[in-house]
Length: 134
Image (cartoon, rainbow, N blue to C red):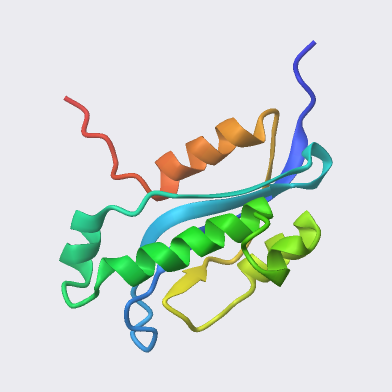
């Protein structure tokens, strides 16, 4: 019997150097699967891509902001009061529209058997540079 499939919601995490222009660089994915009790944000900031995209932007504050985003998603004890909310509340807080340097895409839904593996697949689809086929 195949493993049970669960519904999940996800949003792509983006760096938006100049909010007024709306240009963004995808840097991570936030995935929430309520019935699997899974909430995780995974970030892969490629400094070279960020430098090419926004050469004036210091990556250190971006990395700190992204680390805080991940810590809140995991409910880390030192991540502040938002991290103490339920996983559902943390997901909705993190995925809420905002006009800041780090934003998320609109949320999307799907079904999967393994949220952790799906998170990795979504990183391949939306964040990691495409693999060149020989």
